[in-house]
Image (cartoon, rainbow, N blue to C red; front, side, top):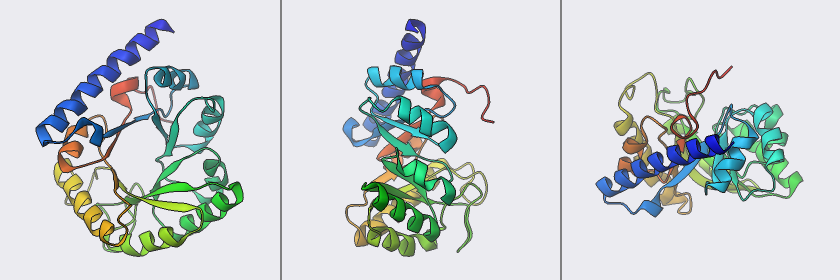
Length: 239
């Protein structure tokens, strides 16, 4: 376990240096960017080690893995982010442990989240997942609402009891005009965030960038980066 803790500490230090350098290059303060460690496929023991190393935000993308892990780590001072595509039949479970759902992309999901947040007596942070590979009114290949649908969905979240509209999230698209152009994709997301904040000033969170492209996200203005592999190592298989 000591070896694993040392490995995680070394990896965290490397990621921290990357974020700090990216912030410096962009003329931003380091505290403007929050690191979220994506712990999917890794055990609760790693989450516990990360917490001991100062990590305060972790993310998961599959409820069947996240729910027991979050329960096992419920004594830790962590904020849990759900970042995967979320089916409505998993909403009750996810609302039980998630502090933020970063993958809100359709009205039916908003209704389900609001209902369960009310039942649980919780306020749940919501990010709209933006699909930059989607057509005008379509969803993206990996989920997400098209840019044209942001305003309507944002208003729905803002009005929904138990939900808090926190901002926007995207994953760099694999197809379409932004494929292979992460910086341009993240800059587009920032433009959409600016538009959103005109109507919803508090929705200022922008979640973008992962292990391979966090520098581009920081340069574009992201407030949160989601890093998994660079901290925890290459996953054996995602199943």
